[in-house]
Amino acid sequence: MLQIRWHGHSCFEITNDITVITDPHDGKSLGIPGPSAAGDIILVSHNHYDHNSVKSVEKDGSKIVTDERKRTIENVEIKGIPAFHDEAEGAKRGRNIIYKFTMDGITFCHMGDLGHKPDKNTLDAIGEVDILFLPIGGTFTINSSFCATLIDLGRWF
Image (tube, rainbow, N blue to C red):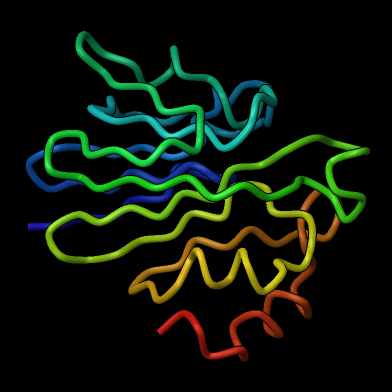
């Protein structure tokens, strides 16, 4: 049975026979509890402390993904899509990787710390997804009104 658990911030645990964890944090640096999970596959969207605490969720044999290369790990198809952490094409906060992955026939998309409006090529690369993890906050990511605009595009479901 597939389960999804949110560990705060941008960290999600998606579990069936294997466990995928996105953007792990240590908790302490954010003032929230750290994730209580161990990942078979750990996806890191960018190298900032609140998204790359692999040691917090790593176990023997964990596969760490930090690039856009398309691959299949333990029957999970993973595709990274280049994006930026800001509206200035990464000049302020760097690059970001959007991860699209499929488990048990369900397609997920984790947008990482998306900080800009995705262009047509990015949206086409993402394609259709069943479950979308989209950051909002407005400081280092898109704001809630822009999030609603993206969802209204109708491309996600």
